[in-house]
Length: 168
Image (cartoon, rainbow, N blue to C red; front, side):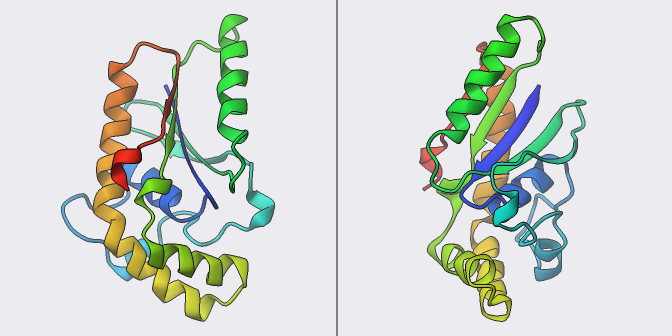
């Protein structure tokens, strides 16, 4: 199985989701500022990284975990889905692909922080808001990751797209 977490910028909730998925963050409590800032790629990617699959590692079952920032582009996920389907039909890919949207977990304060930090490059104002937002939504992200893993195992289709709207 291949897991791909996606959202607007690909550097905040996706980075936390990948870190949770790979057991790099504690599951039983809110995250600390240091844990948030040390999650790989958290608040580190730029607009030049948009649309690129960012590799985060291999999970405990041997599955690769990626993230991607898609902006508002409604074509990125369908393009990944279509390409994976083509490869599977040609017997060049025999793994299930799970594409999971982390955007529904994003609180307003995190959106503002991301805009200030990544959009306007005012990190000293944006980072505290990002941290507050990450602390606010870390439980939702953890649950989203658990549900993503379960869906990957339970569903029979080869390409699974999870919008995760119930996490709003």
